[in-house]
Image 1 (cartoon, rainbow, N blue to C red):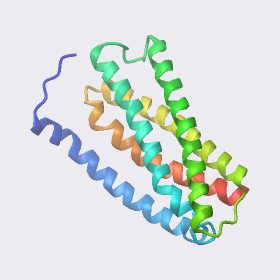
Image 2 (image 1 turned 180 degrees about the vertical axis):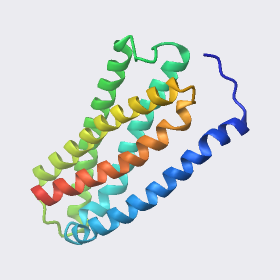
Image 3 (image 1 turned 30 degrees about the vertical axis):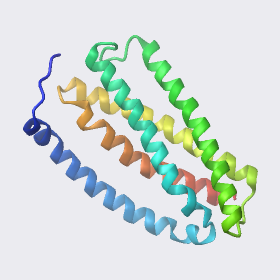
Length: 187
Protein backbone atom coordinates (compact mmCIF):
# COMPACT_ATOMS: atom_id res chain seq x y z
CA UNK A 1 0.00 0.00 0.00
CA UNK A 2 1.57 3.28 -1.07
CA UNK A 3 0.69 6.32 1.00
CA UNK A 4 1.36 9.97 0.47
CA UNK A 5 1.44 12.22 3.48
CA UNK A 6 0.17 15.72 3.79
CA UNK A 7 -0.37 17.73 6.95
CA UNK A 8 -4.11 18.20 6.47
CA UNK A 9 -4.76 14.47 6.10
CA UNK A 10 -2.76 13.69 9.23
CA UNK A 11 -4.62 16.38 11.21
CA UNK A 12 -8.02 15.22 9.95
CA UNK A 13 -7.26 11.62 10.85
CA UNK A 14 -5.59 12.30 14.20
CA UNK A 15 -7.43 15.21 15.80
CA UNK A 16 -10.71 13.47 16.72
CA UNK A 17 -8.85 10.52 18.22
CA UNK A 18 -6.39 12.73 20.10
CA UNK A 19 -9.34 14.70 21.51
CA UNK A 20 -10.81 11.43 22.79
CA UNK A 21 -7.43 10.43 24.28
CA UNK A 22 -7.13 13.78 26.08
CA UNK A 23 -10.56 13.37 27.66
CA UNK A 24 -9.82 9.73 28.55
CA UNK A 25 -6.49 10.78 30.13
CA UNK A 26 -8.16 13.45 32.24
CA UNK A 27 -10.82 11.03 33.49
CA UNK A 28 -8.33 8.28 34.31
CA UNK A 29 -5.93 10.79 35.90
CA UNK A 30 -8.71 12.03 38.15
CA UNK A 31 -9.59 8.44 39.07
CA UNK A 32 -5.96 7.56 39.81
CA UNK A 33 -5.47 10.68 41.90
CA UNK A 34 -8.31 9.66 44.18
CA UNK A 35 -7.20 6.04 44.25
CA UNK A 36 -3.55 6.72 44.90
CA UNK A 37 -3.71 9.65 47.34
CA UNK A 38 -3.68 7.65 50.58
CA UNK A 39 -1.17 5.14 49.28
CA UNK A 40 1.27 7.83 48.23
CA UNK A 41 1.15 9.33 51.72
CA UNK A 42 2.03 5.94 53.22
CA UNK A 43 4.62 4.96 50.58
CA UNK A 44 6.42 8.13 49.50
CA UNK A 45 8.75 6.01 47.39
CA UNK A 46 5.96 5.79 44.80
CA UNK A 47 6.34 9.51 44.12
CA UNK A 48 9.98 8.93 43.42
CA UNK A 49 9.64 6.08 40.92
CA UNK A 50 6.18 6.57 39.35
CA UNK A 51 7.18 9.23 36.78
CA UNK A 52 10.13 7.14 35.57
CA UNK A 53 8.01 3.97 35.66
CA UNK A 54 5.28 5.55 33.51
CA UNK A 55 7.84 7.06 31.15
CA UNK A 56 9.70 3.78 30.70
CA UNK A 57 6.59 1.66 30.11
CA UNK A 58 5.22 4.22 27.63
CA UNK A 59 8.54 4.48 25.84
CA UNK A 60 8.92 0.71 25.51
CA UNK A 61 5.37 0.34 24.20
CA UNK A 62 5.91 3.21 21.76
CA UNK A 63 9.14 1.75 20.43
CA UNK A 64 7.55 -1.66 19.99
CA UNK A 65 4.46 -0.37 18.17
CA UNK A 66 6.57 1.94 16.02
CA UNK A 67 8.74 -0.99 14.96
CA UNK A 68 5.67 -3.10 14.17
CA UNK A 69 3.91 -0.38 12.17
CA UNK A 70 7.14 0.33 10.28
CA UNK A 71 7.44 -3.38 9.52
CA UNK A 72 3.86 -3.34 8.22
CA UNK A 73 4.56 -0.40 5.92
CA UNK A 74 7.78 -1.69 4.44
CA UNK A 75 6.26 -5.13 3.90
CA UNK A 76 8.54 -6.95 6.33
CA UNK A 77 5.39 -8.44 7.89
CA UNK A 78 1.83 -8.69 6.64
CA UNK A 79 -1.29 -7.53 8.48
CA UNK A 80 -1.45 -10.90 10.28
CA UNK A 81 2.10 -10.20 11.53
CA UNK A 82 3.58 -13.04 9.50
CA UNK A 83 6.38 -14.05 9.38
CA UNK A 84 6.15 -14.33 13.13
CA UNK A 85 9.93 -14.30 13.54
CA UNK A 86 10.02 -10.51 13.16
CA UNK A 87 7.22 -10.12 15.68
CA UNK A 88 8.72 -12.53 18.22
CA UNK A 89 12.19 -11.00 17.99
CA UNK A 90 10.72 -7.58 18.69
CA UNK A 91 8.67 -8.93 21.60
CA UNK A 92 11.60 -10.77 23.17
CA UNK A 93 13.79 -7.70 22.80
CA UNK A 94 11.23 -5.48 24.52
CA UNK A 95 10.75 -7.93 27.41
CA UNK A 96 14.52 -8.13 27.93
CA UNK A 97 14.85 -4.35 27.85
CA UNK A 98 11.88 -4.05 30.23
CA UNK A 99 13.40 -6.57 32.63
CA UNK A 100 16.74 -4.77 32.67
CA UNK A 101 15.25 -1.27 32.79
CA UNK A 102 12.71 -1.91 35.52
CA UNK A 103 15.25 -3.75 37.68
CA UNK A 104 17.58 -0.78 37.30
CA UNK A 105 14.72 1.62 38.14
CA UNK A 106 13.85 -0.39 41.25
CA UNK A 107 17.47 -0.46 42.47
CA UNK A 108 17.98 3.25 41.87
CA UNK A 109 14.59 4.07 43.38
CA UNK A 110 15.19 2.16 46.59
CA UNK A 111 18.75 3.50 46.87
CA UNK A 112 17.68 7.13 46.45
CA UNK A 113 14.67 6.66 48.71
CA UNK A 114 16.79 5.15 51.47
CA UNK A 115 19.09 8.18 51.33
CA UNK A 116 16.39 10.89 51.32
CA UNK A 117 13.35 9.29 52.97
CA UNK A 118 12.53 7.11 55.88
CA UNK A 119 11.27 4.11 53.93
CA UNK A 120 9.10 1.34 55.25
CA UNK A 121 9.50 -1.20 52.47
CA UNK A 122 11.45 -4.41 52.13
CA UNK A 123 14.26 -4.13 49.59
CA UNK A 124 13.62 -7.48 47.85
CA UNK A 125 9.83 -7.06 47.77
CA UNK A 126 10.16 -3.60 46.28
CA UNK A 127 12.56 -4.80 43.59
CA UNK A 128 10.24 -7.69 42.66
CA UNK A 129 7.12 -5.50 42.61
CA UNK A 130 8.63 -2.83 40.37
CA UNK A 131 10.22 -5.34 37.99
CA UNK A 132 7.10 -7.52 37.80
CA UNK A 133 4.78 -4.52 37.31
CA UNK A 134 6.99 -3.11 34.58
CA UNK A 135 7.33 -6.39 32.69
CA UNK A 136 3.62 -7.20 32.89
CA UNK A 137 2.70 -3.67 31.80
CA UNK A 138 5.12 -3.89 28.87
CA UNK A 139 3.72 -7.25 27.74
CA UNK A 140 0.13 -6.03 27.99
CA UNK A 141 1.00 -2.88 26.05
CA UNK A 142 2.66 -4.92 23.32
CA UNK A 143 -0.57 -6.84 22.77
CA UNK A 144 -2.67 -3.67 22.88
CA UNK A 145 -0.24 -2.11 20.40
CA UNK A 146 -0.56 -5.12 18.09
CA UNK A 147 -4.33 -4.94 18.28
CA UNK A 148 -4.34 -1.20 17.58
CA UNK A 149 -1.91 -1.59 14.68
CA UNK A 150 -3.96 -4.39 13.11
CA UNK A 151 -7.27 -2.57 13.52
CA UNK A 152 -6.05 0.72 12.07
CA UNK A 153 -3.93 -0.79 9.30
CA UNK A 154 -6.72 -3.12 8.13
CA UNK A 155 -9.11 -0.13 7.94
CA UNK A 156 -6.70 1.85 5.79
CA UNK A 157 -5.84 4.31 8.55
CA UNK A 158 -2.30 5.27 9.43
CA UNK A 159 -1.42 3.23 12.55
CA UNK A 160 1.20 5.81 13.52
CA UNK A 161 -1.61 8.27 14.26
CA UNK A 162 -3.39 5.88 16.64
CA UNK A 163 -1.14 3.23 18.15
CA UNK A 164 1.26 5.30 20.23
CA UNK A 165 -1.39 7.53 21.86
CA UNK A 166 -3.41 4.40 22.59
CA UNK A 167 -0.63 2.35 24.17
CA UNK A 168 0.87 5.19 26.17
CA UNK A 169 -2.46 6.32 27.60
CA UNK A 170 -3.69 2.84 28.45
CA UNK A 171 -0.21 1.90 29.63
CA UNK A 172 -0.18 4.81 32.09
CA UNK A 173 -3.44 3.60 33.57
CA UNK A 174 -2.59 -0.11 33.69
CA UNK A 175 0.98 0.41 34.89
CA UNK A 176 0.00 2.79 37.66
CA UNK A 177 -2.88 0.60 38.84
CA UNK A 178 -0.75 -2.54 38.78
CA UNK A 179 2.18 -0.94 40.59
CA UNK A 180 0.00 0.61 43.29
CA UNK A 181 -2.09 -2.55 43.71
CA UNK A 182 1.00 -4.70 44.17
CA UNK A 183 2.53 -2.22 46.60
CA UNK A 184 -0.68 -2.18 48.66
CA UNK A 185 -0.88 -5.96 48.61
CA UNK A 186 2.72 -6.95 49.24
CA UNK A 187 4.46 -4.12 51.09
